[in-house]
Every structure is written in C-alpha cells, then in structure tokens.
Length: 236
Image (cartoon, rainbow, N blue to C red; front, side):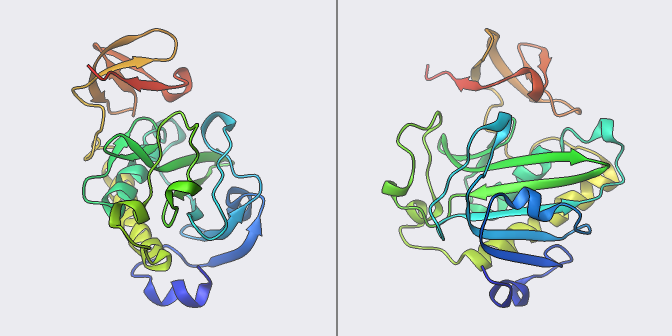
C-alpha cells in the first residue's frame, strides 16, 4: 500500500495526493484538509471507527483501509445519499455479486465485506472505506452483528491491495462525478429492495429500496440513517 506501489496503478484524478502510514489512529483524521481526491491510507488503525461510533478493527496489512477527501459542489442538504453512491462503487469494484445494504455496508451473500463512513465538516466530506481484503477466517470477528467475509475467502487466495485500491478509486470517481452532475439516481446494487426487514425501534415490512434523499423506504414510510441504528433482514 506504499505510494510507489499505488500511484503507478491509478487511472484517474482520485488518489493524488496520496499519504500512507504504517500505523495511524484513523485515516479519517489523516485525510482532513486534503484537496479533493486526496487519499490517506494505512496498514493498521489504532482508533478506527464505523457508523455510530462503532469500533472498526482489522489486522495489520490485511484490510484496505483508506479515507478519501471530497469537496462537493452539491448543497449539504442533498449530500446524505453520498454514502450510498460510494458504497455502490465499492461493491462494483470489489466483487461481481456484491451489493449495498443500507445505509453503509457492502455485503456478499448477506456477509459484510466493507463499510463506508462519510463525515461532513466545514463543507468538506471525508469518506472512510474499510474493506476486508486479505483476512483469513481467523482474522474476522466471530461476534460481529453481521457475519463478515473477505475477498481472500471469496477468491480462495490473497488479493493485490494496491490494484484493488486503484479499482475502487476509479469506480468511486466515476460515480461521484455522476452524482455531482445529475444528483442521486438510486442504488444499482440494492441488497434490501423487495426483502422483508426489521428496523431497530420496531418498524417492520417490505423494503421498497431507497428514495431520492437516500432514505430507506419500508412499507411506504421513509427512514433516515440517523433514525435507524440497525437493519435486520428476515430469513423467512
């Protein structure tokens, strides 16, 4: 994941400048203040976090851990779907059958492959991406709320994380440019649409997908990510 391995593989504007650390508390903080397209990556985070302050841990050198700096022209009130835009791109780049599970996960067959964390501060957005790349079964937490998987387990062999990062950045840049130009056009890879779900707090019903504001619509009622702590998918 060093710059000399990543930079020659980049095919767009995203990824420049590129900052790499062996260890850092969080790539989210490392990426703050970078120009649009700047990326901060590391081998290990000591204070990685996910949605709602949850801890994100990954063994040193196993995951694809990075944050991307964005400075969108899109007004702040229209930015909530940006997490889904990035998640769609990550799913596309990572695995043919990967899908987005609202509000911020990438899953394969119901198992979590990646998580996205977008934070807005002073008009800028820092998007953190944690993707399980070369984790073995023993590396993955057995007590996770959503069972995890990794590209190594899916492929049956280790993957090239530098090439994976280049693929992800290319896909994210294309979808981000479209979002800035045309707004949110919906999820291309929606894991929940048409399925029966239960939201933390009691709401339950068939998912109608996400609306133009990025809200999950369940039984005709839209819900924001801020309102929902967790989503469970019915096995029936």
